[in-house]
Each structure stands twice: as structure tokens, then as C-alpha cells.
Image (cartoon, rainbow, N blue to C red; front, side):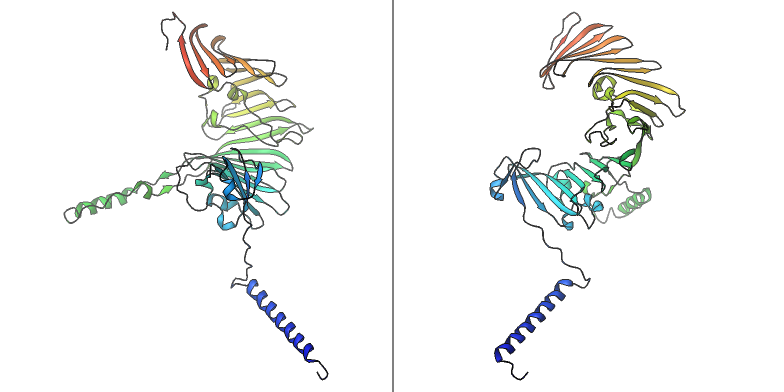
Length: 421
């Protein structure tokens, strides 16, 4: 325009160029061919001095310093493409990912993954060996072990997976009505097995090998790691249903077995069963927890139904077992004195077993006596880290063993005292 100064004209040209450059940058970042925005890289890890359980004790200023500690921990954000395969099915694009890596004397020991929603609620917590919890395979002698916990928006656990060293899994699923647990399922998954060749394919391979025997040496057998593995399907093993009083306190737990199950592998821990009870509360069958050797070895058969009757504090008072026809097969009665379990009585059609307990003033168990059909079979006396175990026959002691820190240090035969070792 007439009258515009040369300086003003240059300023207008400069502003126009800046506007054009910003528009070009916007087009570049808004788009790839798919029209997606590139995900920013997570921030660098934060390092801590830690302990064997992975607790962040003290912040450290560098990776070099952290890895010189006995235990150290790094905490960092992560991208979805870094997730291990076992966690990919649980990921949602709305979650933020956190990776915690525990080191022992500079060597990676364990990884923990946490998914959080925008409001800060943890929706997944998974931890395990690096061999299981890493995206890329890690050369390690570690077993593929770990656990996965999944939570809903109200912070209640909805699924738990325990992955064992032999490749088998235990899967627990929880169902709620509002904030009250109404049902739990236990699923079992066997370890993957090597795929056996089909009979027809094996026959063809044999014929071809015989025909070519004079022409060429047979090919080397496939290496064991080359044999494909067949994943086992998860099988529903146990269903638990929870019954409540009108006031909302737990009245009973009904457990149904869909297949034969080893009693020692059955989990009876259900967080947050009833509003007002602590989330860490454990509902445990005392006959297994307090005297597993005495009542152990039991296989609960398919079609069995067990009803656990509880008191207002959630303690199991009575366990009733019925078979597929609804007939009573056994009862377990637990006698409590305050928070201490005094006795466990097992009664079936042809057998009665009783375990009694004594405690010191601090509440630690000092004596356990096991009876079968009214006759003493075993007694265990505890003195600090030492236990003395006595076995009985027809009510008379026949063997005494001394244990320290869980290791047998001596054994003495009582009848005639002619044999020691």
C-alpha cells in the first residue's frame, strides 16, 4: 500500500513465512498416511536403591550408581510395542504403562508391569521373571513364572493368573454385584505338550525313508525345540458362590468341583468379599492350612459340593461335603478361641480325625497333636526355630525327629531305643 514503510513491509513478509512454516509442520505431525499422531517416547527411567522385594527405598542420581547396589530398581513409562506377549490381550489404548525392573548386583532379576487408567486407577499389575515379562526373548535359565492381576474401574480384582515353572497355570475369576463378590471360578491350564505327528503322516514319512534308503542318508531328526507345542485349553475346575445375610455379612460359601482336584492346589483367598472387611482378609480351610500333612493327600472328586459356614468375622466354623447325589460324605468342624484355632475335627462315614493346637502367650503355635479315631498318631512341639516331632503307634511313641529351620538334624527310634541315625 502507498505510504507503507519498507520496514513494515518486511515484517509482514516475515510473519507470513512463519505462518506458512507452522502450517506445514502441523500437516507433517498430523499425518502419516493413516492420519495418526506419533506417540511420544516415554521419559528416561528413574533409579532407586531397593531391596529383594522391589521396594523403592532411596532415589539415586544415575544408572551407574544404582547398579552398584545389592538391589536397585528402575521405574519408567513404556510403549505398547514393548509389552510382553502375555500382557497384550489386557492392554487398552487408554491405559498408561509403567515398567519397574528389579536388579540384583547389576543383573536383571524381575519385571513388573502396571497399567493405569487416566484417573490413576491401577487396572493391571503383573510381575514375574524377565524370561516371561520381556517383549523379546531373553537368554536365561530362568523359568517362565509370574502372576497377573486384573482390576475393574472400582478397584476390585476380576482375574488373577498364576503361571508356574512347569508351564501350567491357575486362573481365578471374580464376579460382583455392585461391590459384593457373588461368585468366583478357578480354572486350571495344563502345560503345553509336544505335538505328536499324525499316524498317516508318520506312515508316509516311513515309506519315503525306506524308498530313499539306498539313494541318500535319512535326514537328521528334528531337534526337540523344533517340535511344535500344543497349548492346553483352560478348564473350569471349581465354582464358588457366596451367600450373605440381610445385613450384608457373609453367611456361607458354596464350592462345587467340576473335576477331580488336589486339595492342596485349591485356593481359598478372596479379597474384598464383603464391604467393611479388609481387602487382605483370607478365607482359608484350616484343615489344610494348619495340618496339611495330617489331612493332606486328599483328592476332591468331581461333583463334590462343599459348603463353608462362617461367623460374622468371616472365620470358617463348619465345612460340609456332599456328593453328586447330595448325600453327606464328610464334615469339618473348626473350634476357635478368639483369633486362635483350637481344634479341627474331620468326620466321615468310616473315619474321624482330630487336630488340637496349643499356643504361647504371644499367640505362636507351640503344640500340635493329631488323632485318628481317638488314638494319638503324631505330636509336634515347637521351641523357637526347633521342632520335635513324635510319631505314635497304638498310642505309644515309636519315632522322634528333631528339625531346625525346616531341616531334619536327628532321628531316634523310641521303641526299644535300639536304632539311631
